[in-house]
Image (cartoon, rainbow, N blue to C red):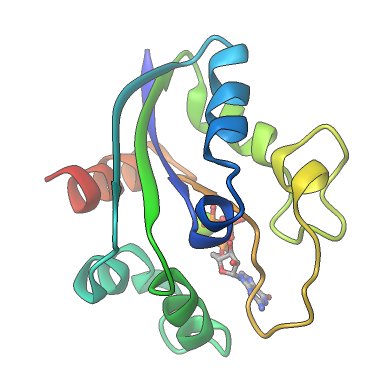
Length: 136
Ligand code: GTP
Ligand code: MG
């Protein structure tokens, strides 16, 4: 089995979509092994998004992630890293396919940051690194 780090970003929590997003994960029969709600700390975000430092969307992204509480989850299942990214859909919610979290629930709000509801780790190495950032 494999595990991934899922974040429900501030837009998802603020819009009351936590239950809907967790429902989709459970409906797919993945296992929610750990779950917490908290305000992200700046040092956690700096570590989490280190690969994007210097990009034009970096600071808007960090500010957005600090704008309200987030939900972090460790989700388990066979091939769950790829599987959750498939559930989430493409990064840009405008073009994410219907049937996905971002495609069904997200859209462009005319802001500098893509408010796309969720994060999912993109590799085994990222998942282990990110789980240690959010769950110690
Ligand atoms: P995550 O699961 O959140 O990591 O999304 P991702 O893997 O689909 O995207 P990526 O890691 O490349 O980027 C992280 C986040 O930065 C995205 O989820 C977006 O919120 C934001 N982002 C990425 N690329 C762009 C971009 O080209 N423009 C803007 N405005 N935001 C972006
Ligand atoms: Mg990413």
